[in-house]
Length: 162
Image (cartoon, rainbow, N blue to C red; front, side, top):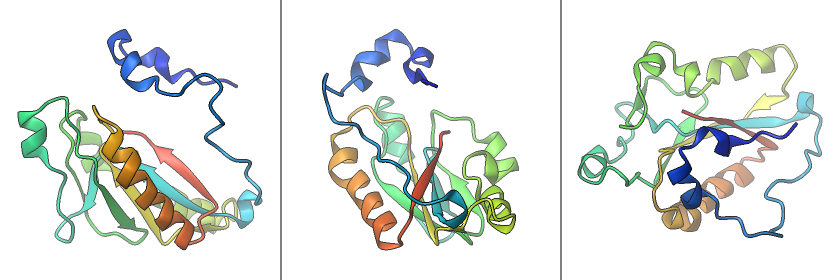
């Protein structure tokens, strides 16, 4: 099944996100481990952070520059306590009511308990999904998240878009 995510973007946004040159190598790899034996991490684009422990994303700059998105990331432990959300382009009401809307930690724990998934990674990641300039994200954020996932032997990642 082909998922056309561009279908949901305004046409004016397409040029900003259609950055893959024709003939570029695939950006995924085959999943070599059985899901029931795999360690899975979650990646949220909702601008989540652990309240009282981590700094929220830079909303002041986002207010001043509405096309800018904070390119940093937050490492969210699997046993994270209260999560905060800092993202002006997303309504946070549902996430405040149930964190699983933006980071399904409890759902992943249930899948592990049922044996569907082998294990939850000890840490997950969150980013602010609204990015006007992807250079900082590509050069710093994505490599840092990749390093985290590699170091904790994560086999797969589930994207939880905001």
